[in-house]
Length: 121
Image 1: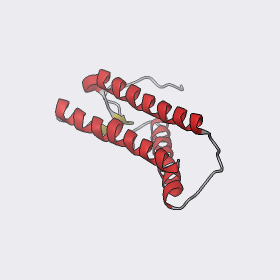
Image 2: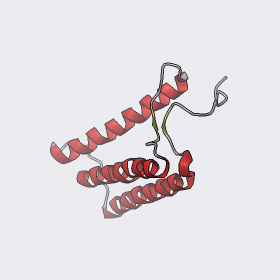
Image 3: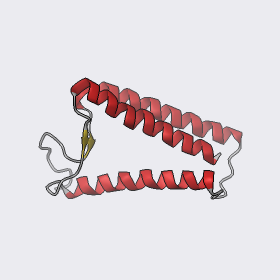
Image 4: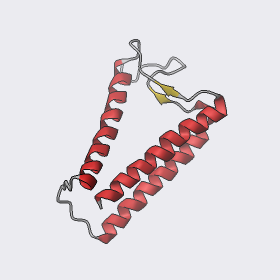
């Protein structure tokens, strides 16, 4: 089942990230990826770092399952496995729908175009 987690992760990356970057570029002529800058707020830098760490962690663990035989001894029956696959696919579909609805305003990253009030004063 470790291979399925890697497949789901790669599907998300291809559809929700790479596919959206291509769509955004064709729509606006801009890829929509924004990196944090030295002037970015602390919360933007932290959230960007956490997202990167989460994706890298999920990718490494999934790859360890597939290529090394690493196991966390999580025993799910077939219903648990099917439920997980369905939840992943629903998440990918909802993410894609949300991104399409954002239209030209979609961006990845911390540097916002508009000045936003701080979330935490």
